[in-house]
Image (cartoon, rainbow, N blue to C red; front, side):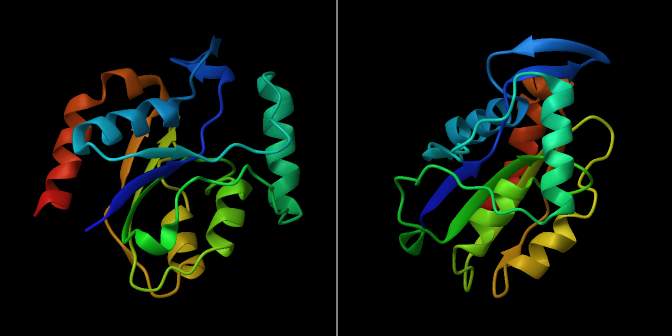
Length: 171
């Protein structure tokens, strides 16, 4: 079985413990790195061709507009052939109640038949929102496993949560 971590994360100004702070690595990337390290599998990050602003308000505004218009968000080509992968640990922040539009673009560009997806998400109180249902609709033929939702402000301390969640993968 071949598995990889694929994620989208945003650094810059972010909410951590109720305050805006600048971060050099996004919360979802921190969580993805923990998963990648614990499973010893490669991690690939979806990088938008037009980066999001480091300014929180500007990034939120852009994400809202993308959701309203069902935008296709172009990203740098990944250096992995997903045809050769059967398990994807898919990570994203909860933006406007679901996954960001860059994830929607990624999902639309691939065949999910006979793939297994383990979603993991960072949030500040909204957990998965509708993203699990949205994944099921977008990934026909895939098995969507139980996901892991971690508050973004707690990702640096999420080792035990990640380890416990990954027990279901090893079975």
